[in-house]
Amino acid sequence: MEFKDLDIILASGSPRRRELLTGMAIPFRVADAYAVEERYPASLPLAEVPGYLSRLKSEAYPKPLEENQILITADTLVLLGERALGKPKDRQAAIEMLNTLSGGTHHVTTGVTIRNHAAQVTFSETTAVTFGTLSMDEIAFYVDTFRPYDKAGAYGIQEWIGYVGIERIDGSFYNVMGLPTRLLYTKLTDFIRTRYSANHKSMNEI
Image (cartoon, rainbow, N blue to C red; front, top):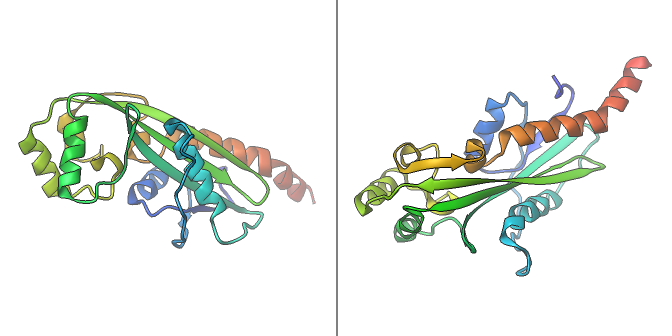
């Protein structure tokens, strides 16, 4: 495997990102929580915000990275036209968000930054998600049962609402959960080959 002898650190409190990295068979540990002021320039196009914030989270990591350490940070944004939907503050906000998403298409963009002691790469992926028309009873049932207050856009695609409410997905399913897994795997393995293969070769020849 590409990951031998590397200390891969996921700086995220999201249980879904932990689940996805585990499913990718990437050995990792979770960073201790640290403060990040998640602000971005008002002039920045919304589609570029997740990448920007993932870099911000990476640069705010409070410990210097050692040579064998790789830090992964990410940010996900739900976009409805020119409007960004964050995490709902309460039940009513969650219901209003889902009612807005009902019967239409929105976009989910996840930005990811991979960084070691000497280099970093940032990338993002966007998925289009189309909801069927949801009744207010269905929306209330989902919110009261699953309490999606920690999820941007007030829903988790892997939960009940994803099974019964989503008509179509154009792009990566897992990107909507919080990580573009195929793209992340490709970028991470390329990063490791580029940054570490020469070192490993020289070490093996000694």
